[in-house]
Length: 175
Image (cartoon, rainbow, N blue to C red; front, side):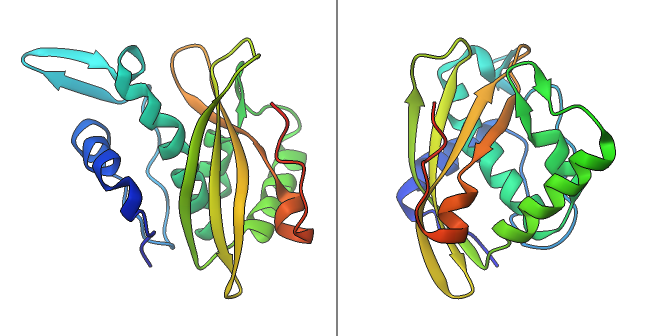
């Protein structure tokens, strides 16, 4: 199944030309993340985090996270979930359990990114990504994902408004 991102076609085309290509199939493993996508302009490679292209990275992190959710790929989810300090750490069994629960809640038939806005007032660069999720045939509008940039330029999903998915009324991951 493919995600419907028609309003973001220009951004998606730019992203496809500048970052690692990710298969959008709902099932199967998610490719491991590299230290950072590279962009080749002329003969000079640049890290995307150092350019205006870094604004595409938060959306790609959410898309990869959602792909890992449907694939029940807890390892990939763990690589994408974290804070400005880096990937989530702690008791591995507890982290695996929490991510498995998140995967059960967020398992979806389809999704559509509907917004991407900068969340101000935080030490690390943070974006709030709004996603319409289709779960059991019902569209749950504007589920909030907070995505934060860690040192080194990687982006991590820091918060998902699971309450919006489970009850229809959420607080939207406070920035």
